[in-house]
Length: 126
Image (cartoon, rainbow, N blue to C red; front, side):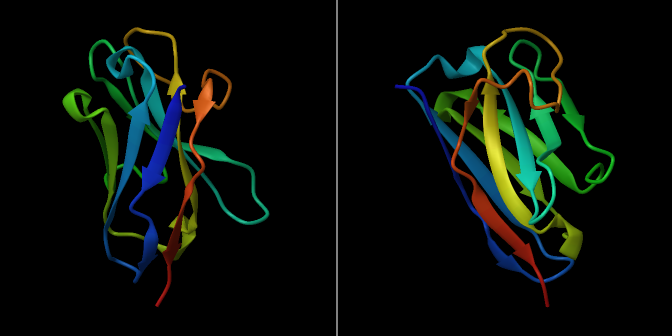
């Protein structure tokens, strides 16, 4: 059974850092593109970052570019989202998702993603 589990969320002060992890089981991990999304209270879910399956290319939303870094460890079936210089507006539930279409490049729109984790809360506050 395919499963994604996020971890690493928590409470952090503005300017601080967190590293989120997305661990997978039940499928051939390295064939899947992986995306990170977030949803703040009262707002729609939005794409944050993604990493492709064939060439490791990445993509970031403008709001996190230069502050967040996505990386994958296929041996560990895990994708990480390193978040630095966090701002209060980064507060949200963060989700990872898997797109079963093997290939280069990736997108941070919700449509291509077939499988979703349960989310992890990130709160940036002093």
